[in-house]
Image 1: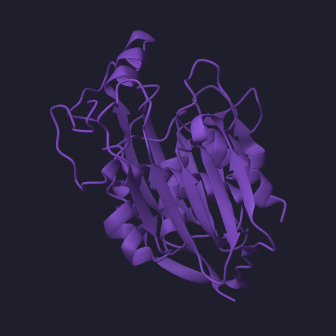
Image 2 (image 1 turned 30 degrees about the vertical axis):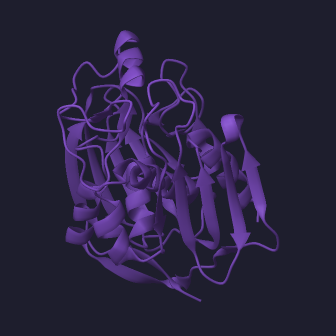
Length: 287
C-alpha cells in the first residue's frame, strides 16, 4: 500500500484571483500529523477559519457562474474560491497531506494552469508520512450523467487513469471545434509536463457573456485563452494541440481530489464540468 506524502518545507505564492480580481497570498505547508488537505482562510477583519479540502466543504456563491470549485467553512464563509488548480497540482504530484493557508478569498490565477503551484511544490520538496494511503476502490462501475450527453464513469481497476473527452458538437460558438481527448496515467512526472501547463479557457461567446456579467475585466485573451468557433486561440497560442482537453482533465483531477483519498479506478469524463465532477467526488467519498 502506498505511503502518504506531505511537503518538506513551506512555499508561498502571490497573485490575482480570476473571478474576483482580488489579490491573494497562498502558502503551502507540511501536514505530517493530520491526514488530508486542509485550507485555512484569513480575510482582514474576520476570524481565521479552517476547513478540509473535501466534498463536504463544497459551497456555491450565486454571484459566480459555476465555472469553478468553491470550498468554505460554511455557507456564510469564509471561502476559498477556485480551488481546483491547486488541488489538481497536489493530487497530480502525489501529495495527500498539506495545509493551504490563504490570505484572501480566491486562489491566484497565475497563467490559468497549475504550473506555478507545481513549481512551488517542487521547491518545497516532498516527504513520506508514517501513514499508509488507503485508496478508494470500486466493486462496480459508477456513472454520473448530465445534460447534452455529459457523463463521468469510474470503473474498477488495479491501476488508475483519468481521461477527458472534450466534444462541443452542437454548442453555439463552437461549430468547427473538433472533438479532442486527453489521458493521465497517474504518474507525477507526466502530470508535471503534460497536464500542469494546460491553461483554463473560454469559448468566445462565454467570454463575452462573462464580461457582460461584470467578470474578467482585469484579463484579456493574452492572459486567458479565448477560443473561436474552430477552437483556435484569439491573440494567443496553444501549448498543446489538445490543450483545452488537457485543462478539463486538470480540473477533473482537482475536483475528484475532494473525495478525500487517492482513487484507484479508470475515470472517463465526456463533456463534463465541475457539477458532474462534484457529484462523482460525493459518491466516491462514501466508499
